[in-house]
Length: 507
Image 1 (cartoon, rainbow, N blue to C red):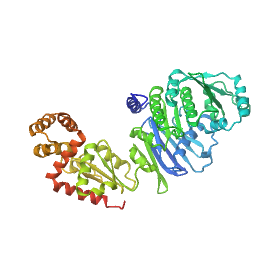
Image 2 (cartoon, one colour):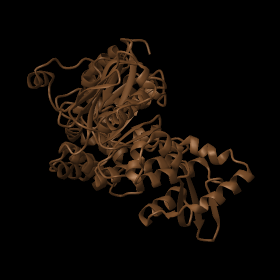
Image 3 (cartoon, rainbow, N blue to C red):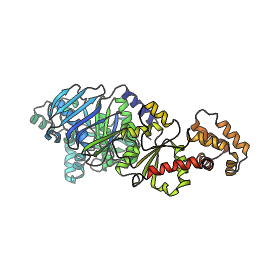
Image 4 (tube, one colour):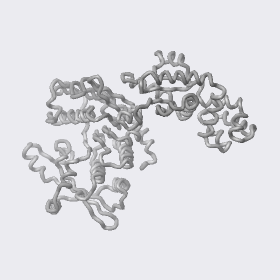
């Protein structure tokens, strides 16, 4: 990663979000294309909205544009202005609302800060790519009337890393030649950069980029590839941002290598924290989806003639909707790697062929599995099975949460976590482990006894493996085999329960 402190920036952003330091928290749309009456909750300062083409991601982004323009200049000529009987409602972190009905503000409790669009400007890129040699020479000559600006050093270092070139300088020239005509036509006095940003569509501005390498080579917008062009555009966009803005980006991944996608997401987190900026993005990129925290991810789906949103969406669910996971498999969610191995061992003993029909995913805790059920209870979960271990009983869950234990969730055999169950069983059958590892029983016994004094039982296997000089994963598999040997009945009962759940719906 470009930042070793990337996760730290994620945590800092969450902390600021928790203190209500950002802006839009809820977007509700009625009678706006697929959005007949739907709401999405924004639970982090960096939001990634994903979903299939045509489902309504851009509509959500356009709604933010729409409200901003109406608040700023009391009109908007975009596509949303032509929709009848529509309503757009934005809510901030304090619960205040701004509502637009049929293009008119009916409630205006809060004003959006400046909204900046850093989506790839394909119109600008086409201007350079479709120019002839004569056009190029003529245009470069006209740019002599404008000053060039150097990219600041901290952003230049990112550019060097993103495109992996030894860049000495990066410059930008903004062609403001059409602004006088715009001023006369619209009757708007343009006095500074902020005023221009608020009333003038930046897509009509022509930004010209010029790069000088350390070996003296010079190239510009006419010879850049689309990815490098976008990286320049993005970094210059960051340079121009005002603190306290909302930034929207549609499909950040366009034209970008997956490694650059990761680095840009990391830079976005850094910028969000340091400049007090909210980012709202759309994406189809599995790389980006995998590289953000769950609270940043929103999946939207069109079902039963309306939009359904899954906030705090697990990345595997988002990728499955995009078709990037293995299809025609049951999704099985477990708490952690030990639980995954435990389940895999039981399946391999009782029905090895079943392992090819499921995809087991670690959710990092039972609460994450329960949370998934809660946030997707309106969806068809026939392709989902959750498996939790023995941290609590079903009765305890129902008593604490005052509701039935969720369907589609099974409990592994035993009343304790897999590590405790397996290690205790092996402790009673040291000869079996000795036969597998070819190590004396006293050596194994000492390693197990001393490791079981560690308070965090998740560390037991690693500690035992270290003391015995074994691979932790291989040691765990061996220990599970011993557990299964002496617990065939509870293992078989669990497997039958699992298999019944698996067979409820055809794969």
